[in-house]
Image (cartoon, rainbow, N blue to C red):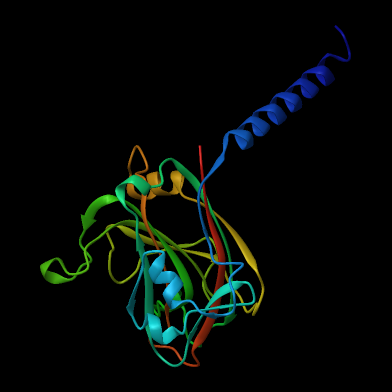
Length: 237
C-alpha cells in the first residue's frame, strides 16, 4: 500500500473543505444596508423620519443624533424609546442568512439584568419576520407584532443566551450578543438569523425580514444610558 495515501486523502479533504467554504462565502451577498455613519454631527430626527423610521414612546427624548460617525442615543433617567422601520412589501428582505451590526455602548443602565427580570437595555435591534401578527400578551390585540429576533448588548447578562421577555412570549426572542463593562468599544456582531429563526419557532422556512427597529429601555434602572450604532448589513444567499 502507498504509505503516502493517507496523507493524500488528508490533503484532498482539506482542499475540498477549503473549496466548499470559499464557495459558501462567495455566494453570500449583501441584500440591504442601513448605514448611520458618514453623517454630519447634529440631530438625527429629520433624517430618521425621512428614512421611514417611526419614533415612538420617548424616542425624541433620547436625543437621537449623529456624532463621531455614528447614530447616538442617550437616556437620562428611566425611559424607553423605540425607532421602528416598517418595510414596504416590495422592499422586504428575502433569504437573509445573517445580519452584521456595528455598534456599542458608552454607558450601561445600572441594575439592568435579564437574569433577574430587569429587562432593560442600552441598545437592542429588533428584526421582524413575515406579516403574521401575534399576540403581545395584552388584551384586545394591543401591540400585536410579527415574529421577531432581537440581539442586544448587555452588561450583567449571559452572552449567547436566548431570553424571553415579559410580552410577545410566542413570537419574540432576545439574544445577548455582548456583555460586560466596555464603554466606547466598537462591537461588530455577526448575528445568524436563518437557522436561529427556524429552530426557535419550529418553522421549515424563515420568512422575509419585513421590519427593522432599535430601542433603548432604562425603566427600573438608574443612571441612564448611552449607546451608538453605525451600520446594519443584511447578508443573504
